[in-house]
Image (cartoon, rainbow, N blue to C red):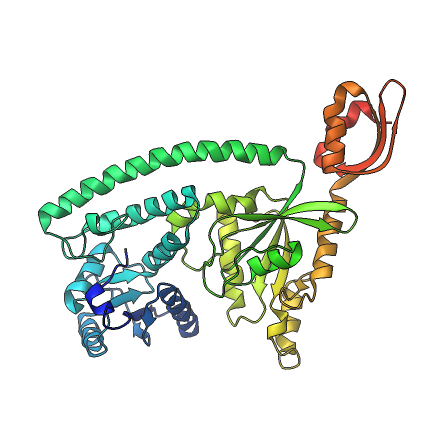
Length: 430
């Protein structure tokens, strides 16, 4: 979707002209923060972001969203800096995008299209690849037009490649609609398989935790530090998109599975929230959520609001949530005393950690262990040999403190197990 001016790329790196619209009631600092993030997103596609242009808007205009005079000024700036691409931090209509392209001679895309392309590059599993392609096609379909589109030259269609005229446009539409139908059928099959796997995972008697949070806050680093694993860690947005789960052994001989999830971002395309439920559902199914924030970030409030917003959309915001401030090693604690005091006041019970130095990790393990302990019952039961399935459950899911067998094979056990399994032992309790 972002295959841009390959002839120019052979001579120099592609450059993107970033544009943000400042509404009358909008905070300029917030917009600047969003544009900084947009620049990071663009860099993820190996495109150089140029200095962003902020356009003040009194009232959105039909043709360019901005006024025609300001649009013409921007067009001159685009030509002067020899930009290859216009990237808007706004939701322009398909016709507005086309108008900007005609005016400037450059492909015009929005933040959503950039995020879609990053997801397309990073998706690894079969389901993720199918879901991203479907999201791209659904986004692209209303934006097809003869100036920039030719499906046969790029996977999944797009809005930035030159086409072959009206006949090709209609052909592209038919091809895209047919491909969307194929993808939906393939995904239906994959989802059935995933549903069966999910039922198996739910039956598995191991407590689940999920790391959730804004992208690039260090969730994968925390997973590695807590579980002594080697999940991919990279200092970039959306470094990994596919689920990762590792077992963590906690104090008190308690085991838990810790799941990493895709990072959230402001203005995440709705298609991708739907598309990545295979990853994000780990948050829905988990017993406890570790909501990770970057304590060194200057935009921590918005990152918190974005994360909570996505969790609400998934229906996971009412679960037990432990706020974890990562990267405590990156701040000057003496200089940022007020910031830390404010965060402790806003988030009582939050844990401050460093995945790099290990600071705070013992406390985080303790909190997880205490949560697991509160979720367990101490039971004494005599289980007959005919219910060997329950004896197996005790050993796989619980902690056995006493175990004796009578001559007839009855197991006399004292054990702790998650409360959700207690009803299965009711008739054998003593």
